[in-house]
Amino acid sequence: PIAMYFILSRRPCRHGLISSLFSWQRERQAMSSRIISIAVHPHFCSRSLSTTSSSPAPTSPITNVISDRIRSGHLVHDQAQERAARRLARLQLALDGYDNFEASSAYDEARRREAAAAEKAAKGADAVVTEGDEQWTSDDNLAKDKDERERIRVPRGMFIHGAVGTGKSMLMDTFHEHARVAKKRRVHFHSFMADVHKRIHKMKQRDLAKHGRSFSVDTSEERNPILRVATELSGEVSLLCFDEFQVTDVADALILSQLFGTLWARGVVVVATSNRPPSDLYEGGINRGYFLPFIDMLRRHCIVHEFESSTDYRRLLSDGLDEFFFVSDENGGFDNAAKQCGDIFEQLVDGTSACPIELDVAFGRTISVRQAHPDGIVGRFTFDELCNVELGSSDYRSIAQEFQFVVIEEIPMLTLKEHDQARRFITLVDELYEAGCALVCTAVAPPDELFTGREGVKSQQKNFAQKKNVPDESIEAKVGEMFGIDVAQSNGKTVGELASVRELAFAFERASSRLTEMCSKPWWRKAQL
Image (cartoon, rainbow, N blue to C red; front, side, top):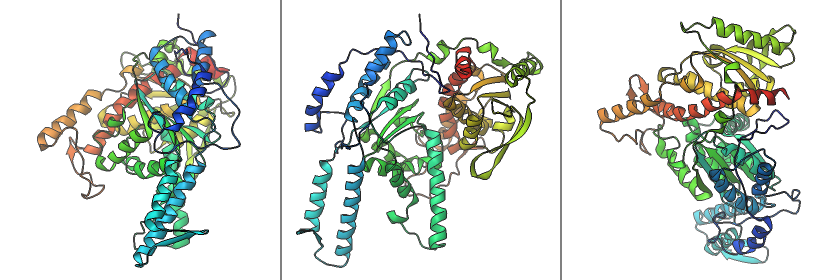
């Protein structure tokens, strides 16, 4: 029988199935041979790991942790998870006591020397750089710097992609918890990019206040807010773990190469889960040519691992969906579903008078909640109140942090025509899931049937490509053409919108799976602990 386990916190448990037969001591003894040569170990790229004297406390390898859960009956065996755990365990070993300070310092020194050499070359000088009692010409100096950086090897991260609900997030969470790295962060990719854009905005505001408005373009690294934010982040984390890595926004796509290029150059190790392989990220997106260098960098700095499993354990272990997810009446009305939903809401407020509140969200704004428990136990919304207005991930995160239970009523069918609402709904579900919120929903159809535009997206793009005589896989502006203009249309929708909706078709598989779990009895039991 499939076993199920509960964690005594609001953090959602990840259902996983895995075993391990590996010896931590044997891996540790073999570590020295891996570090001697870069080429022999796939978890190292062109620079090696550095260590810090103030290391975290010793911890068990992920394979041992999962094996213990299997022996205790919390998990059962799954071969796909076993293979992924083996690789994560090797990375965990490579990261033992890791800190990116040395790699980041080497990067700063390289930039300083390159700038000094370029300045002297511009002046026509012999480009001699003096440091202590030694002198090097610019060529010797750069060669010395290259040798120094080659001796600072950095562990390669991992990019794990596969179907929804198969245990990828559970494995990554376990890896993050037990990785012996002092500076580490686990974050949903949507939340990370929202934080990046917020930092960029604040940095631009500071630059405007300090330097005033300029009519010339300064391309230096010192004035580039994207690179400066990346430098700031590299000082905060040595290990970044991303859940649900997905690119649907052109604003994200166009900055990822600069952002992650700097993070990787400064020794930050990235581990990510995704439903798409790297080659399919931002597929068909507007100006995708500007995004392609990021894919090449991702493959160079991360081992790409395909999670070969199709079993959705969220659905498998989610019983009692009918008690918290109510479908509309046969005539399309919500009278019966609304009554059932209202009864549950009354039980949650437990005799306390629910009242409307104004919830503080990002950038000094507020969201009106028509019915809420004064202590933040439950909030009640309609779909239109949450997804038919201009709200984003930071707004939904505020809701998820405020309420333990969330009621969402009158969820409609989500089609290509309403792709903005579909995108917001998926983001809302992701944020609520990350916070461990339990849901009560009323909808016109079960979770699996809510999104109806999956096949239509692909056919519309193909029809457009045939009409215009352009390849189906390459509807984008070429690098070097007019930047940021998307004039191609298909049935009134820009090609950029269609590409984004194609990504949403994959994202909705995840959202449907998470909806099922959050409206299930096991999830509710955890939320009530």
